[in-house]
Picture 1 (cartoon, one colour):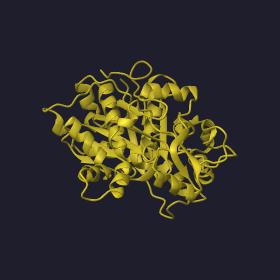
Picture 2 (cartoon, rainbow, N blue to C red; picture 1 turned 135 degrees about the vertical axis):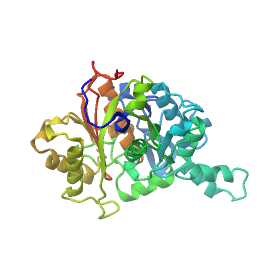
Picture 3 (cartoon, rainbow, N blue to C red; picture 1 turned 180 degrees about the vertical axis):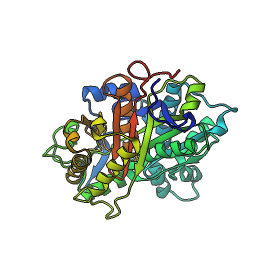
Picture 4 (cartoon, rainbow, N blue to C red; picture 1 turned 90 degrees about the vertical axis):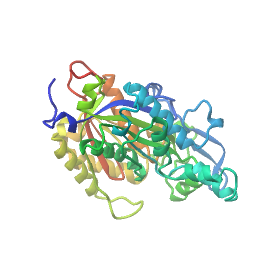
Amino acid sequence: MQLLTKAPDHRRIVITGIGLLTSVGADRETSWRAIQAGRSGARPLEGMHVGSGEPAFGAPAVWPDREGMTEPVLQLALKSAHEAFADSRFYPDARTSDRIGCVVGTSKGGLASARQMLAGPPTGPHFGELWQSYLPHSAASAVACRYDLRGPSSCPVAACATGLLAVLKAADYIRDGYCDAALAGCADASLEPSVLAAFHRMGVLARRFEDPAQACRPFDARRNGFLVGEGAAMFVVESLSHARRRGAAIYAELLAGDALAEASDLVRLDSDADVLTKLITLLLRRARLAPDEVGYVNLHGTATRQNDVYETLALKQALGAAAWRTPLSGTKSMIGHTLGRPGGSSWGFAYWPCATGSFRRRSICRNRTGSAISTTLPKWPGIGRSTPR
């Protein structure tokens, strides 16, 4: 095996399991096949309106028993976590639970529970349950309790960067010796009237379209916004030494992660893209990659007038001439803007094609709100997911 880093195995971080639940599929394989086919999960939202009675559109998660769901964000997180653990063939037990962490973020917590809680009296029979479900850390708590994960647990809340920062935090826990592995990711269920009304007032929701599947058009000259989506993305993150001991199959090794904040405005972006340019440059330096070694970039691509120009400018400034040769793509035109989850789904839609041999080995996933992660598929024999020896 050719080593990608000189760090000892217990400080090298690998991804061994992926769980994805999107508006185009109830699992990672179905979602990926739909993305490859260009299918969209956008559709009208029954009984919901924005503005002056205009019908609302979005990309709700595929869920067979949707009507029977309790708090959606908890159910999305639990289902995606189950798939990630099953994919990694790793099942925590009483002997290992105190060495397994849980880092699951949400952008806002359980909004459906918050709506129900505010609509009823504080003495109602379900008020306590609703209170617990609406808190931002509710998904992390639900996953940790379901799988008896007794290692460190936390809940990043960082808008669109939430999913990325969850994986970075899990990697830090492992490198610092707090645990050997962790379940990390994000779930988001924001198709709520209050959220849609806020984005409508901001002018960032897609409008003037005949077909919802054509509503969100990232990097198109006619772009005018996004549709809100929902779903979850979870990953089993381990030290390489832990993965080796149990003979785990590996999707990718995390080489480096970095984060910066554009501390200028809550919604407006720096027209020069200086912060994002610097972030990508720092990330490549930390990962010891040259711009022409980047094999694929998963774009944030919100289809807003500001973001797409900002993102394009930063990539050109950071990658130089290599930016023109680097394959680029995004998924919001199909699965919607999942708010807290985009970073997590970017990971999934970068790793999965690598594992199936659809893309070259190296990739960079980045997110508008200030985090970026460099990953590479391990150079073990063969294409795709491998078991180290």
